[in-house]
Every structure is written in C-alpha cells, then in structure tokens.
Image (cartoon, rainbow, N blue to C red; front, side, top):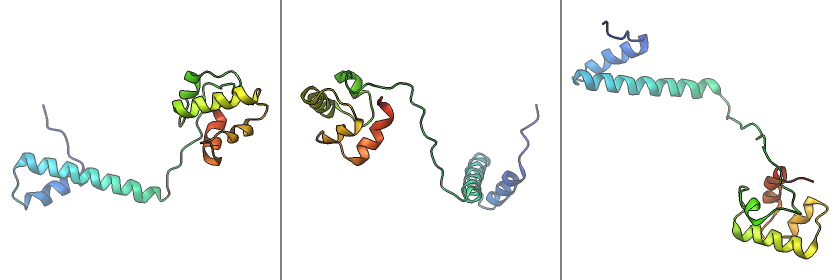
Length: 122
C-alpha cells in the first residue's frame, strides 16, 4: 500500500518544519494544523463579506387566542413567566384581534414582538 500523496502546500510546510528538528509525527501534525489554518484564512479573505442567515421557514403557527402555556413556551424567547403573562392578558382582554396588542403585555417590547410575530397567526 502506498502512502497518501501530500499536497503541494502540505509538502512545503512539511519541509519547512523539518528545519525545526521535530519528530516525523510531530512534523506531520504541525503541517496539517498549519495547512488547515492557511485554508481557513484563505476562505475568510476570499469571502470578503460577513455571512448572513437566510430567513427561517417556520413549520408551525400558533393562534394567540387559543395557545396553551406549553405551546407558548416552545417559542424562542418565551419562558414560563412571559407565557403566563400572555395568557393572563388574553384572558383579561380576549379576544386579541391584532397581534400588535401583545405589546401591551409587560416584558414584550419592539424587538421581542418582531421576533415572535412569525410564529403567530393573524
């Protein structure tokens, strides 16, 4: 069985590290680490822009007027206290006709409202 062929970069790094008088196994490990770092840096430089996330595709929608405590807690950023506050507001002011009314609940501001909106039906 023949040994694996080294790439041009790996071979160059391997020869450079030979000057340091490391054992062969250590030379190979250091060469692989440097090659990985070089590839990573080339990828970052070549990209030239910050990665952006695509909008999520939501698999479910929740009706704010019928949602249970457990359903509300499955949403990101909603814990048991906020979920019970939403249910208390809904019970006091039912039904909620416009999702923007949810901003009247203590703990829901503009940012949280914007993050929650895709999960609820209108």
